[in-house]
Amino acid sequence: MKNRKALALIAILALIAVACGGSDTAEEVVEVETTEAPATTEAPATTVATVTADPLVLGTLMPLTGDLGFLGPGIESGAILAVEQINAAGGVNGQDVVWVQGDSGTAPDVASASLATLIGEGVAGVMGAAASGISLAIMQTAIDAGVVMVSPSNTSPQFTKVKNGGFYARTAPSDLLQGAVLAQVLIDDGIETLSIISRADSYGRGLAEATASAFEDAGGVVNTIVYHDQNATEFSSEVTQVGKNSSDAIVGILFPSTGCGVLQAAFEQGTIETPWYFTDGVRGANLSSECGLGNALDGYKGTAPGSTAGAALDAYTAAYQERFGTDPAPYSAQAYDAIMIMALSAAANGVTGADIASGLVEASGNGTPCIGVECLALAAAGENIDYKGASGDINLDEQGDPTASTYDVWQITSGDEEEVIKSIDFGS
Image (cartoon, rainbow, N blue to C red; front, side):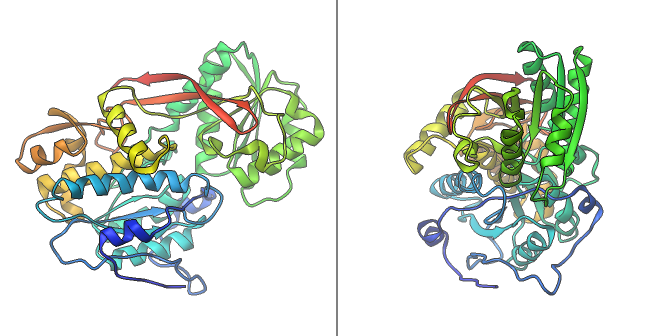
């Protein structure tokens, strides 16, 4: 349905329940260029604000529905905090930033419908989408409309190869790096042989291939890689295949709902007793309780993009805790940074999508170091800045990829409880 209500930003922040989630899509959708949703698909509810031609108008396109729903509230809260801080500091060029909320759903037609709504409301930039397959499916529509996309959580290596004209960037690093981190964790744990079960989409394939390549380069042996249909509901045959080689460990590159099907089949077949390693797709997903596995996953590890320790992270963490009463959620720091670098480019160059695209790389590095909203005045005054992000020293390259990043190695300690046991930094 289409249900739009014009609200000022303060009303949006007061009335919107911060709830969203997401999913990746099949790799086949990568080459689909969509400009609007099919006639049978209605746009999800989208909250909009009354705007003039002058303010910076930014949208969020996070999944309010779907397989990554557990991540949504945390990701979007980082964007909310950024908008609030920017406006409390005087906005961009003296005008409050206007936030327009959209739902990417879990399929390209839903995301396309929401993107069309955001474009109609005059957004210059969009923080999103969350899932790599969704972003790949709708990116050309945004580019054609002159709208910048900055994703906090797209990790597929495919984005490095896509021609984006400067209208796309991401604050999460490529899974080429996550694959290397995960492979090193496996080697450090004494794993010599490995099987992988993964989603058959751009996220899953890219990360599975990166992990396998890095593991083999380090001397390990990959016995098999099994891809499952992300729309499937039964996974017994895939789990049987991944378990038949008696590998030292199994890597599961999963999303929660289908991941539960995989893990329940592994539990029934006894394959769950082989050590499993996970990735960012299920971090914080409460797999033990959601999948009915009790303590079967205790001690198992995973990897995910994290945040670099330092003044920027400390300031962000304190502000986040004060605003939301909890520790920052996964990818919330990357969402905060996505909004910030768009706002900083707008302060320096102007509030259109083309203006923002022209300065994203410059805003992220090679100037005066600064953190948070203190960068705004410098950018508006024409000074070259080096934005030190809440998630780390991003330093975008010309393709919009971060050249510096941090990864967390996390472990399931008891049931749904997780803890970070190590962080690994990659310098620019």
